Structure formats: C-alpha cells, structure tokens
Length: 89
Image (cartoon, rainbow, N blue to C red):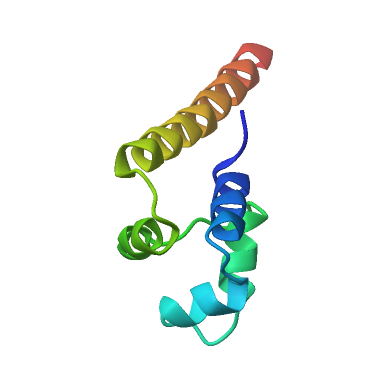
C-alpha cells in the first residue's frame, strides 16, 4: 500500500498542479510544505485537507480511509515496540 504522501503526489500530478501552485493556493509562500507532505516528512494540517480535496478533486471517503489506515499503522508499530521493550525488562 502506498503512503499518504505518495498518494498526494500522484493526485497533484494528475490534477496538473505544481507544488508551488498548491502551496500558494493553501496560503503558503514556498512549496516546501507540499514537498514535505509528499515525502512523508510531515502531514498536511487538518484545516488544509478539505482544500486539498477540492484542488485535487478527491473522494473525501478515500482520504479518511487512507489517513485512518496510516494512523493505525503508526499506533500498531508504537505499541508493538513498547511491548517488546517491556518484555526485555
């Protein structure tokens, strides 16, 4: 399964938008924010996601599913790491 960042990159390209145009549309001065999202270094703020849905013509349910799945994976990893640490004590 692809990451949320990769999903955003593919949808931006499909919408024929540059990172710079997306950034300006979202109120940012540089495309670095968009680049960071696409590389998985950060996630878009929740208040920007509805605008991304509009810009990229996305299905809101698909976004919800992707975000929930990604967060579930993060939580599972964190909990399994914590369990392994406790077992080592």
